[in-house]
Image (cartoon, rainbow, N blue to C red; front, side):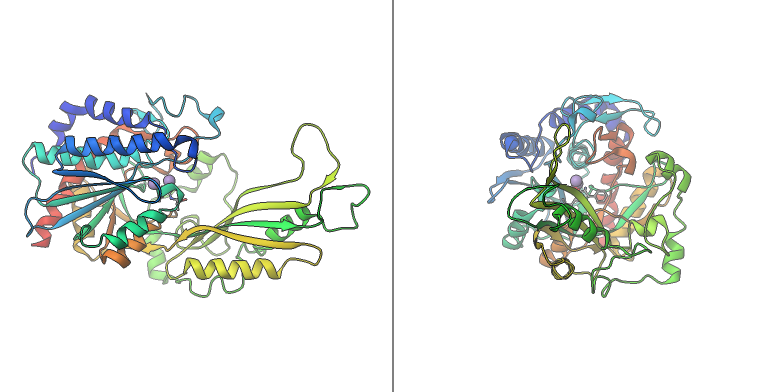
Length: 462
Ligand code: BES
Ligand code: MN
Ligand code: MN
């Protein structure tokens, strides 16, 4: 592989402008108001795949948003890499907290990104990271160095649970046949500390509803004499963790894999400053499950968090009322071996069992998925590691992430192939938050590193 650096620096402005054009499309999958934009984004991806050198790029309809499929098959006997990414984004709300409008990308310097970062919804998650693969393909095709076959599968429903992708994958096993799946939709430790994500957590997301009296009541006339659904809900939620911050849902930990002391010691070698971590979040102290470090709490341990809670009167001034109902959205991040459907059931049973007389509760599952751990003694991991070593001058550290990409476990089940997670974002890039950004350096470094993965993987596969 010739060094891609020259090609990248010659085409840097265009690479940035193309990504900026894509980021201007507000492809929010969760909100039907943006449905045309989501479709526009899929068309844009299709065109970009053709322009980059795919022989085929197609829009495949699903019951929801389409999947963009592209391929360049140069020789049936060579390995095939399947690239997955998503063109949908999270809602930008609350918009007023953005320093610049979420769909008008601007490049600004930050402390961690002295060469500038692109500020826009989806810049890091996942348009910027997905587009690195399109530009890496362009480089390999234009310079006649594509060493193997490549397939692209870019979906528009990742941020809402990938339900239709699951069906698509199960129905198109042969078409999607591959030797390795490659995804850039995670992060790395720091620009001078490259890492490869070796684990993702599973997820169970539920909504709970507590109902008391059949109507809202005067809080003076009825207060103290009937169960107040908001009081009850908050009490129930508070009881879901004990004094050591262990989750109290019966059976919750039964299948949790306990790491050996050696594995934990290995994990603890990853550079981490508790002080920097706290400073970045403006907190005086971290908080979490007793007996585990911060890095363990957000990777190898399961969690239960309220993501939203509402009920009663929240308008101007005071209204004296006992609401008839109270609601909350709860996410549980799961670790390998915890089955998300089983956990959803355990949660439902537990939540129903702790409801006092005087209220009824309802638990509605939203979406979920299994966790994933990728072994590091594989050709895929070794090829990725060597690619980082080539472009960063350092061996990357394997690290489990706290986030979830539920479709990865399904890929393994349906397509029987492993996934390599080459993420180039930083945790501080504010994905899902206001002022999401992606370093220009990271974007270009990704484009530089990916072709080496293709080369090393193809060589090692021989
Ligand atoms: N790209 C993220 C997941 C991620 C980010 C994993 C950083 C590791 C590091 C993905 O788009 C995402 O947001 N996933 C959701 C789950 C999905 C079912 C909505 C998540 O983790 O909340
Ligand atoms: Mn993502
Ligand atoms: Mn996301």
